[in-house]
Amino acid sequence: MICDDIRDILKGDFLDGQLSLEEREVVLRHLTQCPACQAFEKTLQIQRRVFQQAKRQDVPRNLWENIQREIIAKELKEKDGIGNRMVRWGKEFLFAPKPVFTLGSTFAAIIFLVTIIAGVTMHKKQMSRSGNTAILASYNVNLESTDILSNLGTDIEKFFL
Image 1: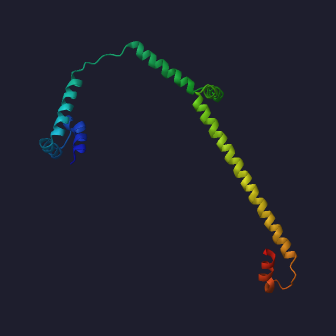
Image 2: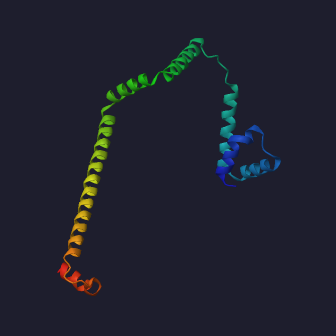
């Protein structure tokens, strides 16, 4: 095993005594050979003793009352109607920091421009297609020969030249 794996085991199950005998032997064998992991294990042991010696302190009553009040207020806000939410969202948007407003406006302008450019491009393509159709239709009408298959190649060459 590599040191990272051993350190993960040391942080968890090793100090709690929840390893199987085989796993414990592997960890102990590694600890005898690796000074860095030995130092890490000693640090964990010291931290564990410090936390075990710490005394439990009760939380002040007014702190719990403040927490309960905030929870109730949050639940009431979530139950507000959609109209109140829209008004709150509008206020947050209007009074948002300037970078957020600028970024949103820029994004909207980009989407607007892309939409306009795409519409103009599609319109041009449609116009060129309809123009090509009119040219082909006039070409078919203006054929000099009645035998279309025999003169097709030469008539097309004349048309394009």
